[in-house]
Amino acid sequence: MPISVCDRLAELGEIGRGERGLTRQLFTEPEHRARALLARWGRELNCEVVQDRIGNLFVRRAGRSNAPALQFGSHLDTVLDGGAYDGAYGVAGGVSVLAELAAHGVETQRPFELAAWAGEEGSRFPVGCLGSAVYVGWEHLDEMLELRGDDGMTLAQARNGPYGLLPDVPIRDDFPRPAAYAELHIEQGPVLERAGVPLGVVTAIAGMHRYTVRVNGEAGHAGTVPMPVRRDAFSATAELALMLESAAREIGDCVATIGWLAITPNQTNIVPGLVECRIDARSTDPVRLKELDRRIHALAKEVAGRRSVRIDVHRFEERAPTPLDEGLKGILRETLDAHSLAYLDVPSGAVHDAMCIASICPAAMLFVPSIAGASHVGHERTAPADLERGVDAFKAWLLAIDRAL
Ligand SMILES: [Zn+2]
Image (cartoon, rainbow, N blue to C red; front, side, top):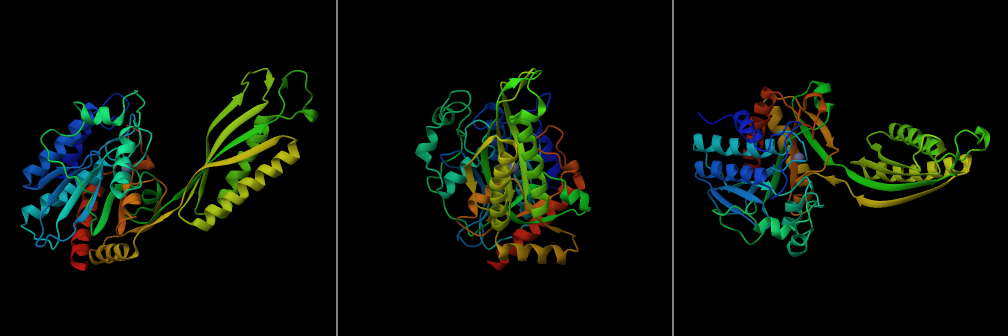
């Protein structure tokens, strides 16, 4: 009787547990222990276990041919005080699939390779999807090794230290291109739960624009400057924020957030003279992203004119949406239909390793619901039945991809 995915997640979920949540940052003791556990699981299944020089860990089950592998996986690292399911579910679920195949003596056409990508969260070193970005060549290994973490240590020092690469696992020097890539993940949002649907076929990974906004007004005495002559930078920002919210609702299928804001001088008795804030705008549709961009600039101009303040908008980050592979999505929908499993097409507002891997081979994703949509928090949960169903569906999907490739 193979170990259930819930039991594997529970075991992983004890590693790095603190009072508020789970903390497993790349190349720290708990993250190292999580990788060691995965290596042990891999060996117990008589799979080949290898790692590469950035710390990605692979569990590979041979197929009938030695053709490029069908790859699947996610990540074992977490944010600070994160949850036990983000990333870990895709890895533990992958182990469960391999265990099922072994238990039933299933032979696959190609090798099945489970990947645990290193440092997806970017929570210690300042690059997200670090392992998968190096794997696909978006980032260079040597440059990344010079990255300095928030504790002052370089990635090279951390990787070569006691919690770096696993001492008993062989190193694979190249980054072989898989035949296809599939990722199983929790939704991290409330859409599936609210719809009462247990599975999500991910349509695309949202693109993102990020802006810094500087609103220059005029500071003054909160008691003496009359309302009609004020040039209050915060009131202008507040108006801009509400108008941006309306614009995003109006455009639809996009989100826009002001989650960071700094008021100068930030005193109770002074009319704010300067506000800096950041806008995070996302959509899976490049046209909507562009429309948001147009509106942000137009709204800034409008508010600045009406309130006699100066508003400078600067885009500092731009990432295009990642469409996921139509062929793989089609196979997934057929598989779910064949098993009479209900599903919904959903976009991914969050970034995943699949975003990088999609640049070297067909890639797609399957979501399961998150209770109350909670993620990146200690109380992140998915119902056990949903976890089990997700793994069953994922296994059927992988086998269907293997037959179709
Ligand atoms: Zn994740």
